[in-house]
Length: 355
Image (cartoon, rainbow, N blue to C red):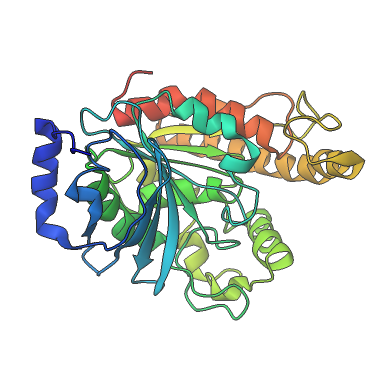
């Protein structure tokens, strides 16, 4: 099949990326597609980050979706990345990094499995949607030491130094980025713009707790990492009150969010319209509903406390943000789908796209 010609913007980006391209990837699986980036050398070649992180393999799933295997030099292992391309690839497009919750998307607790409508919604936008698969119980941060149970985690380095240049070079993006995440990654998406000023133009946090260094926030992190994940938060930021906790606390360092388009949401913890038996976003059976209403209600009430405190902190600093605090809602996927849709105008402003 003859490859379609690249438009001038794509040619310019491919030329700019040529300096970091190395040898072709042999034997990569491909599907029929009209995307000029997928059918050109930009994807077939290996964009390389300054530390040597690079694409080591890829599969084109269909005309909109591909799966990348990106080697992280910081973690010394390949990370699976799924990508949904925009329908219109006639010009370079921005990128939305979409993060999963506590299990890192490794199981079924991710956007693709629990709310496929989210990707359908984003599929109508002119944006590359990039989802990492991995990082369970890590809070997508750089840990100070390897953990004997959950391993080596250097996700801040991966998301701020390694992955963006690889994605930009492979997909021919326009260099504008936004980031969104839920639950534990609702903390991460506020940490990362602070850690890398200017990298993310917009951030949306759904049911995340920004306060990780105060006793309540510290308890939430330990519940996720320690009780559920089996890791030791001493390997993450050290023992409680170690300066690393405050250094990575978005609430403490909220000034670093100035200039970022912000969306922050959480429910009250009271049951709402998605807390029904065998609903589309409820785990099966009475046990699934009970867990969502009871456990999910308590967790959401806690993160709601964090979200309102973050609102007060940002207001005190004169940093604007958009808030979505409905009177009901538990810590569950139906509400996160609603929040994603509600956050799009904020993300779009950062990405310079139509709202």
